[in-house]
Image (cartoon, rainbow, N blue to C red; front, side):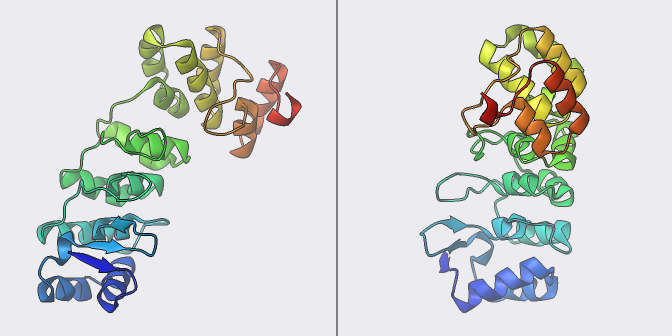
Length: 238
């Protein structure tokens, strides 16, 4: 079942979800067969599920966890994919918005914690959370058992994971992890990776920002000063 985003039903059910109106949501679900698995199609031809409506930025809707429960009980698929320029699940979107309550509710309902398809390199919800500096969601995903890459570990300051994963890493993995540590304000991990030859002014493929740029952008002034002392430069200075 597909519904255009400007149709009255789509507008009404979206409002119920975004405002936490569970009475109205249950009524819509009862009155329209297949609504729980319906896809709402926008004017670009992209489609999303009702769980995507709940987790769409900025997410953190009232009664988010109970909304997940209502939709799942009615048949919603917690692992359904966005259809468009990416394939993110509702968990990707909740992680990207730091909506820890809904992250937990989706995982409790069976969401795949390591699902691929993120806008960040086609990766997992954790990749989205740490890339968008959504630290609470990122750490909760780790607590709930998410697979942790070297970049994830360095960005979140998980030194034990960094030490375990680094020996098998490529030079590019090491440099990306160093960039992530600076993006996440994790000086200890940054120092450790620099000691193993990380490039202090490495530029990632996803944006023209050096580790120093990343630290400055996220307000890690002490780390930025340390990077300067190690030869770190802004991209505009290279």
